Structures are given as C-alpha cells and as structure tokens.
Length: 66
Image (cartoon, rainbow, N blue to C red):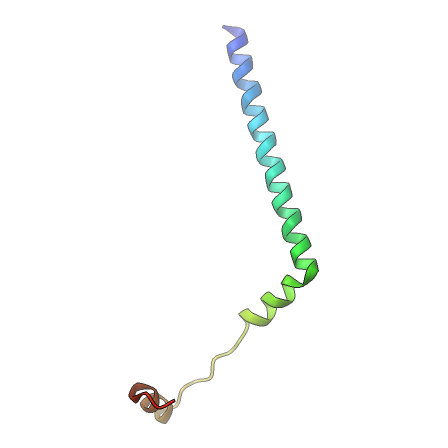
C-alpha cells in the first residue's frame, strides 16, 4: 500500500511541476510581447478620453444626424 501512496504523491508533484512550467512559459511570452511593442498598443488604446456630448449633439444623435 505504501507504493501506491508514493506513486500518487509523485504524480501530484509532476502535475505541480507541469503547471509551474506552463505558467512560466506564459509569463515569458507575455513579457516578450510587451517588449516587442504590444505594450505601446495597449497604452494607446486604453486611455482614450471620450468627448462629453452636449445637448445639441445628443439631439442629433437621437435623430440620426451624425
């Protein structure tokens, strides 16, 4: 019975190691994408300010005049 428990523990250790390796690979891939310019693309697209619509703009938008 001792060998079965050891086998199960070994399997769990391997699963943990595999999860760790997958996580490290994803982290390294993300870092490479940021270094290759994806970071600039994210910065440009997420911080856009929307103009506040005035009363006249809201009326034109509701009617369909753009």
